[in-house]
Image 1 (cartoon, rainbow, N blue to C red):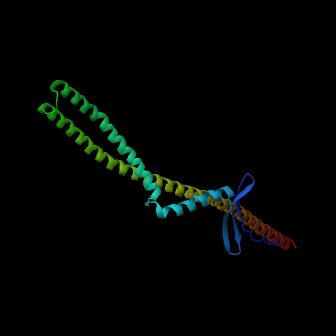
Image 2: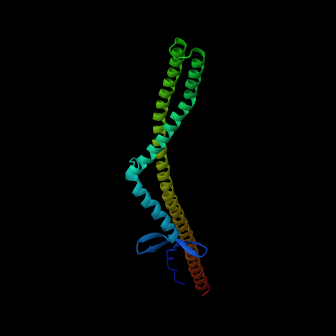
Image 3: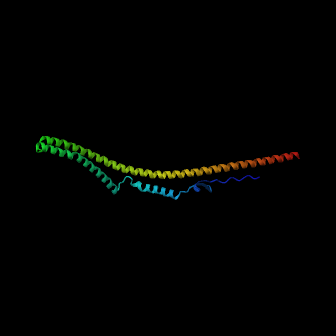
Length: 214
């Protein structure tokens, strides 16, 4: 009996619902791994990659439209603060004027001036506080816009990384399948070779015994 030939390389394949997703094969002295990306996967990956490339250079640059939108939000916040101050201090001034006019008939007196100074001082403090709030609001709007952009970029990067991770996982499984097939083939080859050796040994022993009897 001749010695069995060395087993051929066993490729690995991963299928989902009958569709081949990943494979590993040998061509000459090279071993290749291949992943079959579906149309949907390709569209998602290309979108994430192209969007990331498009937005990365301008992530910290605000367009004229964006600046206008942020300014409109800041103007609305400022106007709301001014309206709130006026709603508080205008009635106070009117009530004081009415009270002074009814009591003294004119505004040329110390009580009116003292009360007026108090109200104006409080209103000045409120305006100063509003100015600080406006600056803080401006920083908040800018930071919110930047954070929104960073979150979007992180999302796109996550989509790309997830896709690549899935591909590598499938390719690893194809490699594992290939290794399992090759291990099985090599084991059979080894057993077959050993069986041939045992057969030849038994034949030699039988021939030797026959020679002795003759």
